[in-house]
Length: 76
Image (tube, rainbow, N blue to C red; front, side, top):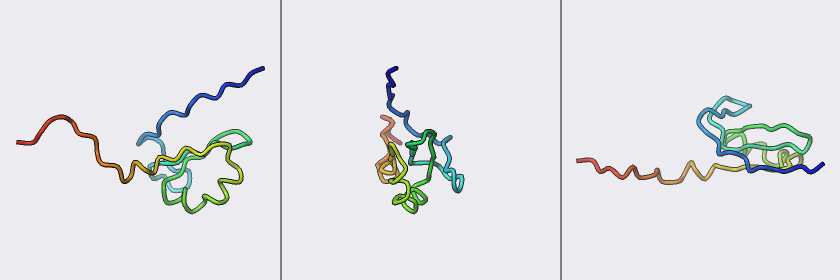
């Protein structure tokens, strides 16, 4: 049997932190199976422990400081 890993989909506003319910910016895929979602604050707080048990960490915290995308429309 071959296991194929597919890339994780981007996190959306509907994805919520498992610790506090804020918008999630980190997805932690556990080595034992399953996943956890964390906001940037709790992701940083638990990072050392998460690295020990994670198979993969999807970090989208860079979106917090990225400039918003242009809509192509200018305000008049």
